[in-house]
Length: 189
Image 1 (cartoon, rainbow, N blue to C red):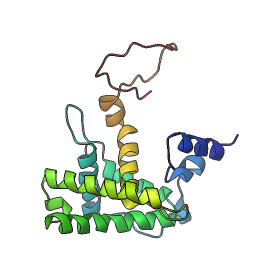
Image 2 (cartoon, rainbow, N blue to C red):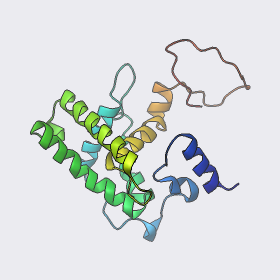
Image 3 (cartoon, helix red, strand yellow):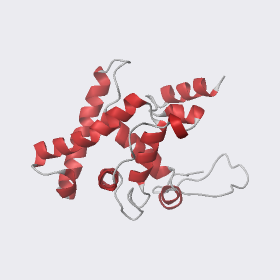
Image 4 (spheres, one colour):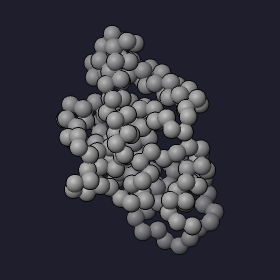
């Protein structure tokens, strides 16, 4: 079994596809292979940080903004996504603001935390409905891309792995049965 087949099987097991999975198979693009588009502006990265922070807000643990998920999204989209997925993602950034204007008569950055949350819940429902009727050749919904990158960026960051999850840098012996107490954080390692 090769890595491509293994990744496909994992995606089926978790109930979907992993956008940007080519990154795990061949690594990010380098030099001339990078996207023709320029890196995202600081304002756009700040918007992505706010979207990510609405998805994973700071509570007793840090939120997505502290993990710099906006910068992570920029790198992943520009260096690791195929051109069609880059286009969907980049157009989706504008669609978030359009949807916010339509729903709340303000742009996302000016919206209240509750307005942001309501908008992202509506976009998540829209993405799930889209997924149900989507054909294999149709692109992934832009909000699904943003949500996937938020989760990946946060939980693979140092902040996410060490402060939101339990982390042991060099695990000791194998323990097949570890007691679980209600409220324990999941393991990062």
